[in-house]
Every structure is written in C-alpha cells, then in structure tokens.
Length: 155
Image (tube, rainbow, N blue to C red):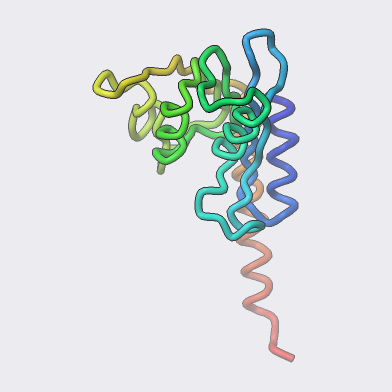
C-alpha cells in the first residue's frame, strides 16, 4: 500500500485526485502500476486501476491476470470494477472506502456479484486512515486554492 500511496502522490502533482495502484503477481512481484491520469491525459478512463491493469497485461503478455492482486489506495468505482472483473484479477486490496462511488462493498458490490462471470476476493480498509487522509487533504487543498483564486482581482 505504501508504494500505491507514493504513486498517488504523482497523480496529485499532475493535478489529479491522488489514487495509486499496483498489480502484484502470485510471487509478490510488481507487474503493473498506475495512478490517476484523467486530467494529465484528458482521459475519462485514466483511473489508477485501469492504468495498472493495462501495464500488468503488457508485462505479462496477456489480459488474463488470474492469480494477481490489485492494491489500490481508494475503493474502485463501477468502471474500474468492470475492468477488474474482465481482467480476472483474483484479489483486490484497497485503502479508503468511497462512500459516493465505491463498487467493492460500500455503495455497490460489483466485484462479488454472483450474477457476473468472475468474482474477486476483496480486502478493504487497509491503511484506511492514511489513504483517506491523502484524498481528503488533496480535496481540501484544491478547494482552498480555487477559493483563493476566485477572490483574487483580475489583472
């Protein structure tokens, strides 16, 4: 999780919500990593999970990531949950719960939906305080900067 949080900081530096993700294989080796790039790449699907899954598939030479674990700092959204299921990831470990858009047990539970062709083991709340604070602090800072900018006179 510590490495995923480091990747999340890279997203924040680029103006994106700080979310980072790594895919590790069954031996614990990192085979893919990613962070949010929606703003930096003007990419609506530039979520950390999608970027990490793509990198892992490239590294491993195929889309089927069975046996791998995705570690991500924030509970995956519905879009990412769909990508996770389609990649056949075996396990997802995440930090902060997402009470607005989470799809791994909070708002929805897409990853363990018995109606879908693949179910994923889910472990949530790992380093929850640290990962939650990382996102909250970024939003507070972003809102402060926007507030200060809106109060400045135009030159």
